[in-house]
Length: 381
Image (cartoon, rainbow, N blue to C red; front, side):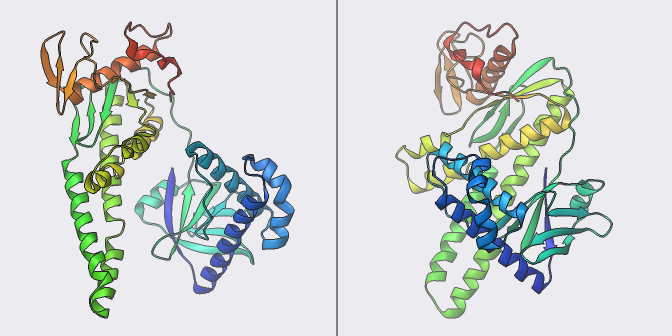
């Protein structure tokens, strides 16, 4: 888990952190320019530019190693998305156990800078204190947020409990109209989130127009309001996804069930290729389905539940009772074989649970239809 804590740094300490962040970003950009583009191994990058990073930018040994590791990691991510590596900005630094330490007695952290170690107090509320109590974190990331202040993202590791024996499978169908629908009857509407996102979008549009025109005081006031509104929509979405994921995992633990999720990787890129209006594109791109999946995955590990991910092919077009391809129109699903009309999302969640049960069988998939073709390679957690 990552615990975010605000740093109570003095002005002279902020200056040292700024200089270190700039040197770290410059070192990453230098390594990315000098080392051949196709190289993603941090060991290979380190072998080529380690000495130069220390001599040119004044980084200590471990900061230079962290810079090489970040370049390799960003190259791997860019290669996966088939995009070039973006220029590194002076907004974050990676720390490991040799250049970062946490002390619970006075709630301070020690960070390496270009001018040596700095002991800085952290602003820890009850949540941070509860998660960090008795812990000895070995890695963290120093980040400069949009408010211009420094925050420390501390990674806390715990040994998860052994997963409990499972008796059943529960499928989870995620969407925009309904955030999540489970095969055992749970569902959460997305109307509230859509309404709030639309309201914030209208507010931003009005303030941005006024910030570009009007008097000097009007422009300044609009910029202040935009800054205050920044992050509210994102925090509300995260809070709601936390609520939904908590209830799904809690129900799965109580009923000894395996959570089966859809693998929707790349759905945003695919939908963006379709012709849509500006409003629909904004709503689709703000859909936080991957965040919900991540919350469910880590809560499952934390609480000792099984969670698996399967391919969603034909899950919305297949009837869970007879496994025949039907007709889905909006919220309704019609099966021509059974001559029944059902809720489309509930039907899809039941199909997903069937796919999960088929994939998890030791003897291989037992379904005879085409929807499970190739699902043996589906990633599992």
